[in-house]
Image (tube, rainbow, N blue to C red; front, side, top):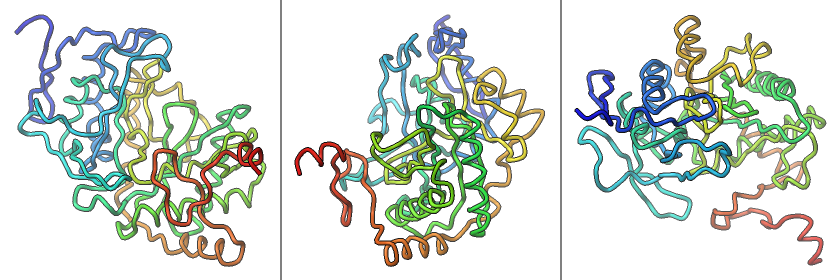
Length: 343
């Protein structure tokens, strides 16, 4: 074995990691091998988030630069045609264009170590399982703080979302995004399409905005947002993905998207959770999402709210991301200030 490779043992498999000494996070000196060993250490919780899901990889062949935004990185959505280990599984998915492709599917912890070998620093799973890739089994609420807000306001927003979801009979779980925001997750019955689940999130976001208009915004266009928490409803659209629980993030301090208990949320900061701190925290505290698969909620109440928004308030769909084809019932996908200029 040359000095430029090593093998990581994980759940009965030996996975090759080349250039293990390569520094992925220069600001803190975290190496490629450390990232692989981190994923082995958090394997049980990580598999709870990833098992059976198609996954896109955010890859950084040269590691994270001093300026993450300027790093040489790219997303891999299609599984490579060559060089896949014979044990690695893929699953067919349909993209918004209607085209299909095979994505890597996480069926065992070794898949994630292989992803590290492919220089992935972020793992982005679909909210579906391989048995049915057209019907999400997870409702995802992305709470995105806008300029002028602090993490305490994101926590406040998450607690409001929790109260509303609980009121609707759902069991929400929360995690740090690895950036400045929070993600609220709810396991749901896989009975609704991406269009319906996105519609449910829009209804939820609008109700939160009605209850706390100074705190929440559903405005897709940045020019219409103030110092509020944006509920990014388009993270529930097909082929839009959040970083997985326990995924490393492209942040200089090797930060991690970390599950947190609701009772602890007010006492943490995103900076608490890194490749070097999370294994110890997980060993001492356990996985805050260990019960996430115990129940699956119905979307009936949220879809009834969406129906009332449409029938009683005249509130229809909201814009899709720019790379999507024009969707039925979608409003004009044009920035409001530009629309006014052409009136």
